[in-house]
Length: 132
Image 1: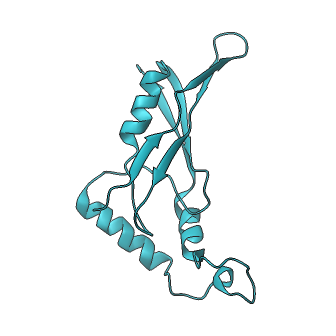
Image 2: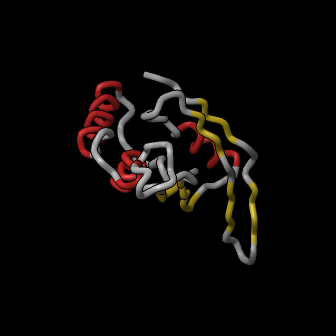
């Protein structure tokens, strides 16, 4: 299993408008090594929640890229293989997609399958935080 480079780009920024409602935000960079790769973000999210001092509330995790998805599942080698195989079968790389066809699109990355797989999984999650 390949390992991606996960790096928090900044410390959480905490903003308070009025009252006790707080918003903390941070950006992170995930550098992958393969065209199709799963990355475990659990520690990064946990570290963010702790460093921001969040004890109760919600955390929203979202991707800023249209070919990467965010989802929750077990981090187990056999399951990771199965998830990749399932997504590859559901949206096959070598099928015809207008996005990959120069007659229809100016994109030369031939990554329509990645965009479509993201639609299946989604680009964000909202998780409840309780007892920090």
